[in-house]
Length: 386
Ligand code: ATP
Ligand code: MG
Ligand code: MG
Image (cartoon, rainbow, N blue to C red; front, side, top):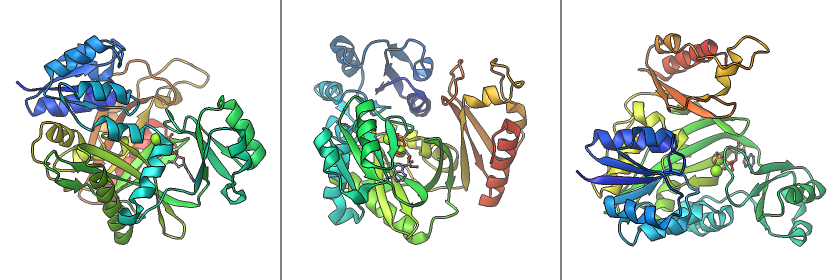
């Protein structure tokens, strides 16, 4: 059998393992934590740090190709793996996505062909940079250049003084101050590019965030115009092509109240907003990643059913419990699964915590309205306010 490798042991790795195994591949996971969602499913778990040279050699020796399931795997490790194995996406691509400064610079370089720009922003490396922020970037959001996710590592600032304080609170790591934009809604586009240079783009997804974490994804998005979809898909293809990227890439965009499109960030891997592809598209984002890595032709990205995905956070285990009780209680999956078109995906995590992604459920239906109705029923069953 052909082995594929994954750096990282989270749920994205787990769903990749399942998809790759279904295609006949064996999958090895490198992850320091012994009990991890991807490790439970993998054919082989290498429990080692992402930078352990012995483990990296072993992974590269075993696997025809290696990918990464979370963007903060040191790019240096991917470069090391590339000496003995095909690494997709490449270290150079991942390192751009790991750093908001490099990412925004790259998006700006792409603008001639992508026709989208990032939010107005300024790189903040020291106090003097804060003094030099143009007034019209306030109110803004100060974001750490590296390691932020799910809204962590960012602070909303109304003034220069607040920005100064927030920068100090972040221990003066390199940040980006972005202008706060009047969002109408948020969308993301999954693109894929094969080793042969062919690329494909999935239908555009409309995303709702709560407390900085993805709450739901609806495809087709009820707010998305055909023109907006065309522009975002065009931009995603321009960006993935410019990088000569191999694999699945997700790009997040803001749609502003005046209808204009702004590129926010990208994830060099399958993405939470692409989970709908498992149940609603001919080729899931995870099967697509396996194809790209194995230098196979890309799969069909067509969507066969409207879909609404609900993220299942650990909070649900507590809000269902009796008031005042800290004991987690298993949600009523039997009732959720009784809804038409429900596909439940749980990630094998046995300690629910607030804000922790435990799983997701996707509703597919012949019409978007039906999928939305079943999604709303699930929210009621799970005690999630709409
Ligand atoms: P992710 O988990 O998607 O990687 P993240 O922590 O990297 O999230 P962003 O995606 O940059 O952070 O921002 C999180 C959310 O904050 C966005 O989805 C959006 O709702 C809001 N937001 C971010 N930047 C802006 C902005 N410039 N103007 C308005 N809202 C913004
Ligand atoms: Mg991010
Ligand atoms: Mg984001």
